[in-house]
Length: 185
Length: 192
Image (tube, rainbow over all chains, first blue to last red; front, top):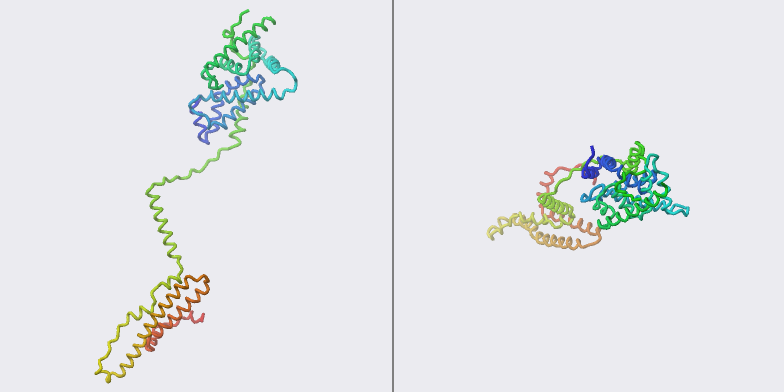
């Protein structure tokens, strides 16, 4: 039985039930957060590390969580920050002169499942060409189907900006697929 | 070729993680968070709500206790000196002797002698009261002395003088009576 956000947060208030609360929080949101991180990091092991760090950060800062926002919005925010930090770290550590965008596209191809549709792989590659903010808005809107209001809270930007970013991103992705997909087939 | 991504199946091309993945991840998170800080059952301490009445009562008791403590701990030598001298009280009890009439003087020649003897202490009394008041002033002046040893010696002297004066106030017969009535203190002798 899944607990409500309020019940999970209340479990953290009592030292005896902290572990139960942490487990309940992970059970409720681990899958959604994993896929959110995975789309940004692409690599499975990297996503695992970021997911762990996200829950550790959430545990350490649960006292800062205010009940006026939803728990998953707060967790998405932490996960997004952790993922962006990890990406920046990866780019800094990369010793080759290879373009970051190109590197990420190769990573998508390497990590794609055998049963994955080609168009889905192209879509994932196209997303890697987007600027950071557009990438985040597009992923959350397109894959997670989050409302613009929630995206605006997670990314700390206005709803209008989120909508604009999404439409720009959608156009770019569609153009990328149109250009590259038709070339290969 | 026109592509509308809204019509596509919104699926990520990456394979699903293994079944154990989330279990392992949870175990790692627990080990790094709750596992490092095991929950120790704390004993619940009783909390007493402090009412204003209780606080006021406690304050009164505390003030009373402090004043009692300081009054009991005051210097015994000074308090002794502040007491009314015993000599005064002894002589206050004595009734004044009536002067005999001139006609009875010859008959009561012996009694005059005894009267003189008794009246002697009366003269003494005035001297003694003077002496006591003197000793009082001595004591009060001694209070201001900084040297404790000098102060102790002075009080000892004063008390000795008082005893001598009291003894002088008694007639030999009275002293004999007192001596008969008193038992000898064995332990006091041991230390003498």
